[in-house]
Image (cartoon, rainbow, N blue to C red; front, side):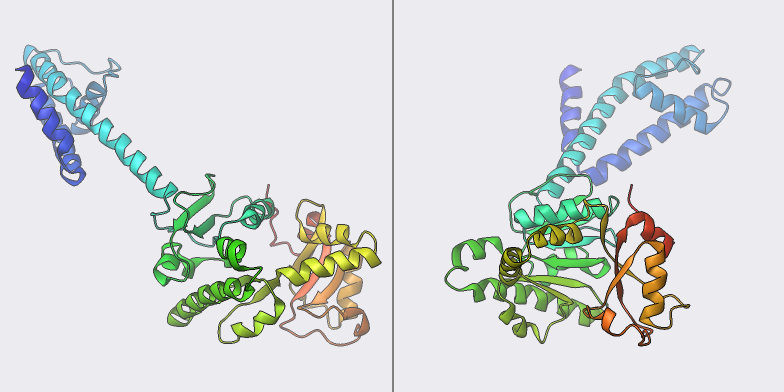
Amino acid sequence: MGMPFKKLLYYLTKLRNRIFFPLFTLYVLFAAYIALYIEPQTFDTYLTAIYWVLTTLATVGFGDYAPVTQQGQAFTIVLYITGIGLVSVFIGKMLKIVHVLDKLKVGGKMKYTGKNHIILIGWSDKSQLAIKEILKSDKSIDIVIIDELENAPMVEKQLYYVRGDATDEETLYQANLPEAKGVIIFADQITQDNFATRDPLLVDGKTLLIATAITSIEEKLNTPIHVTAEVIYQKHIRLFQRVKVDEFIPTQEMISHAAVRSLFSHGVTNMYSELMSSQYEEAMYEISKQKEWKTYRDAFKDLLNKGATLVADRGDLHINQKLDEPIPEDAQLFVICDKETLTKINPEYKPSK
């Protein structure tokens, strides 16, 4: 008796999940039907019988239902003998599924199915800092990292990892690019470490290939995706003329510019840091044009009274030189203020907690 039972359990563990789980469900439903047939006075409904079978198999019987006839008690013994082994296999398979799913997630083999997420392409110290900055700005947003590392570089609740070549459209689809809020392409760290000093064009060339793959998906689906790309040298931006990149971050020029400005204007780097980071109370935010603002002067005065400073329209920083000019309907205004002031200006803005 012992050997055949062990053999049966062995075969059950080897059954494919798509066969085992329906089989287990049928077992529970059939056992509940027999219990109801034998003990109609005890189990007044079929649902009650299912409840009793499940609590019995889980060995957590609460004592609220119990067979009173000899046939019912005999069936309970059979249920214990056959069912507990089956439940053990069920729990084992569930744990294995959880383990496999966790392994797939850490290994970057699972497809991300969420929406309005941010995709970071390329893992480096800059990516890690970007994650911290994003979560400071919005603690509820999901972040998907694309890289070719064997395992996820970070394991956090809101972080997802896709392993693959970002120049391959299939990898971008796995990260659910069409539903993303935006993409940041960081300069490839390996290429940068090995070749940047000799030929930075190779690093920016890799970024261009990734941007080309993203543009191809945008055009196929007719879906605009905001893309920010890091380039080593600003002169390489001309190479991106045929692809859709919304903003460029020229690393070398920005570092050099900030370093030189700090010599001639002491403390300017502190101002840069405060404007660029969300860890400070005041930062730069984008706002929409309001109906009562006809000219830049109207907007400037109204915002100043509310505690905000109007500094730019898109990339134009010369607002103070054209205060009496009308504000275009498609204006993209930027202000410096704290989050509390921003909620007064833009009631739709909800600061992360």
